[in-house]
Length: 259
Image (cartoon, rainbow, N blue to C red; front, side):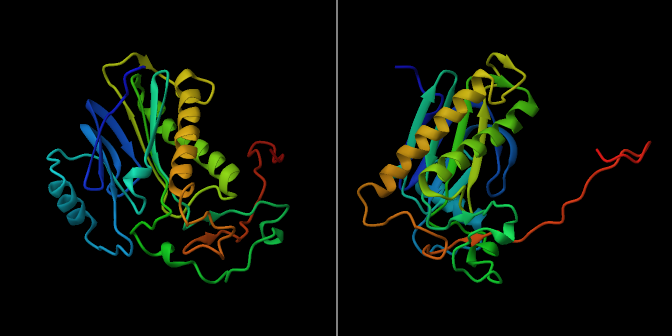
């Protein structure tokens, strides 16, 4: 079997993913670009409402015996539901739950879409809270290649697209209100300028995210009394984006013709 991209360790509800001198790009709390040997996925208890997220992360990592710091995501999903997928130069590690779905109706007009019965004036509890709920989908993707800065950023988009397509197929929702992605690459690897869906790296990311996400959903719900909600109205938390934006054409400033 091919060696994993990340060395993984789970202690006290904390998953550490390790690879020396890794470049990371995180969309999660205190995210952004960084270089270091580790990233973390931290499972929080039900009802978690900690306001000092930085302090909470420090305490959890210390309690688990992890001294090094790096990009950290939080989730209400237990680490026993984390799943890893590897293909070629890419690996994905995913935890998934959908108790707080984020629906995006698409029809001729968003206002004409068949939206379930929810109060359109209620943004839901997740709209103003930073803390994750049990539905958070956290995706870590890494490659042994050395990606250009734009390619690493694009890897976030490729992973998010694969996550949305998979969730839509499996649950009817493209995401949850607190999803996050961490993308990583090895600066010492083979130089790779692109990571789009038609590239080896991008194609592998799509497959790995899909397969790890499906496996995590199966682990989370397959032998559980909990079930994927049928609608946002049936979920513990969630939102429906049913507003319509103003759409206009663009014109060429030289001849005034519509583009």
